Structures are given as C-alpha cells and as structure tokens.
Length: 331
Image (cartoon, rainbow, N blue to C red; front, side, top):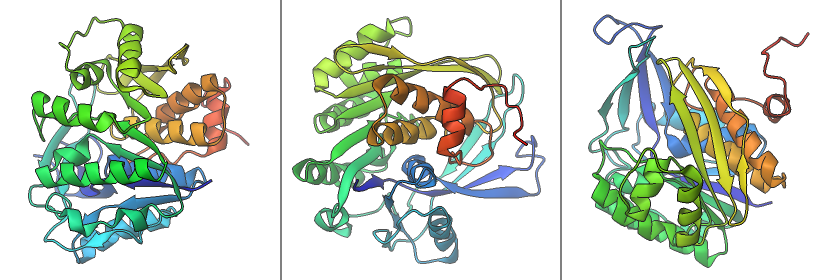
C-alpha cells in the first residue's frame, strides 16, 4: 500500500468559547484545519500513510499548523515554506435555530499566492498510491487551479487513484467558474463525492433540489467515467440536529447506507471525515456496501467531537456501522 497524498490550504480557525457570539467573546479557541488537511489527519489516525502538501509562511503560527499535522502522523516534508501569511477563519457555533456563522480572512495567504514551480510532483508522488483534493483548492486563485491541474496530470501519469470532494464555496468563486474548472478536473478523477447540487453544477445542468439522487449519480458516473461516485443526503432540523445518510454508485449498482440522527457538537469537517473514511474503506478492501457504511459512520462520529478532523478509530467506526448506535460507554 502506497501513501495517500492530499493538496490544499490549512488555516487557523478561531472559535468563541461555548456558544458565545463573536460580539460577546473575549477568548477564542485555536484549531488548525482545512478540507484536505482534515482528510490527511483522519487517514493517519486510521493508520494509513499520508502526506499533506501546501504552502505556509515561515512563522510560528504556521509552524503550529505543521506541528498539529505531525502530531497525528501526517508527513509534512513536502510542505513548501514562503509567502506572508496563513489563512484565518472564525467560526461561531450555532445553537437551536441560530446557524453556525463564519468569517474568512484568507486573502493573500501563502497557499493562495503559491506558484506552479513551488511543487515538484514527480518527487511528491514517489511511493504514492492515491491523490485526493477538493474543489476548494483550485478556487483559491487562477494559479492554484493550474497547480491542481499539474497535480492531477502527474498523478494520472503515475497511475495513482485520484479522488475529488466537489466542495463548492460561494465565497471563493461563482458557479459558472466552478462548473468549468471542476468539469475539466473530473476528466482525470476516478472517484468523486459531493451533494446533488454540486454534481449538477459540475455537469453543467440546471440545479434541481428535487432531482432524483440516483439519476444524478448515474449520469454523473457515466459522464466522467468514474469508478465510484457518492452523494451525501442530509436534512437539517436545527443547527445541532440533522439526519445523515449517503448513496454510492459504481456504474452498475446503487448502495445506500444506514441513516443516522445526529446531534452536532461541531459543524465543521463532516464531509472531510466522509472522504477520509471512504478512502480508508476502499484502500482496505472493504466490500462495496461496507465502503459506504464505513464512510457514513465515520462522518457521523466526527460530528460528536470538537475540532476540524475526525479522530475516531477504525474500531469505533466499525462498531457504529455494524449496529451499535447507542453511545453506551465501554467499561
């Protein structure tokens, strides 16, 4: 089994204590995370060999982000140092009918201003088996889009499995730009995950919340010749209460996971936990049904913990996916 490489931007997250509003708080908890970084941490925690690629400045705060990755066993030797700043975002925890709130301060970050020549993909992909990225990375800048294309082309040439989390972010680019760039990137991908709306945008078809999920998945897989595509389905009742399930299509059969009723502790990183759990299950030889069950159970457990990444163990995820959803303590 080769290493799993991810590419993205890691950021400093600052959150008020408890359920304080920004306007109330005089103290903030610090976390470090980003979509692909969260995937790397979760996979390393599951016991996989992972390598994270980004660009960070030479300062103490950026070093804290690197130290956080290393703490969980993520290889950071291919992190490029340079530029002026690490991106920052603020998150205010939602409660009841008050939604989680975000404020971003990431303009001019080292990763957003990275250059194609910063990354030697032949060297980065030595000994790798898998490459994962999200739609956030090419959205950071036109140059980051080119960097992402360089990465997928090099990964494809080396025969790596390539996965993408569509991850549309309206604060970074518009739907037309997303559709154009992601559609081109998907030509190199083997596995994709996202929402119904993101899949529709990627295909360049009108968004329809009432569209049949299976029909969208079938069209999506056929259009981009994917091995697997998955869609997460959720209903949100309050800021803290959702139900959560997913469906996977392999070009022949649809596989549906169990549905979980979740009380959310931290609303960040559920999709990243799903991606990491999906990759783990595929690379560990699980059956197709168990792949989607493990991915959904892993993302469910993420919502039970504070922080950006899922720190559940494989045994904990399997315990949930095989039926114990009581949360009963083990003594």
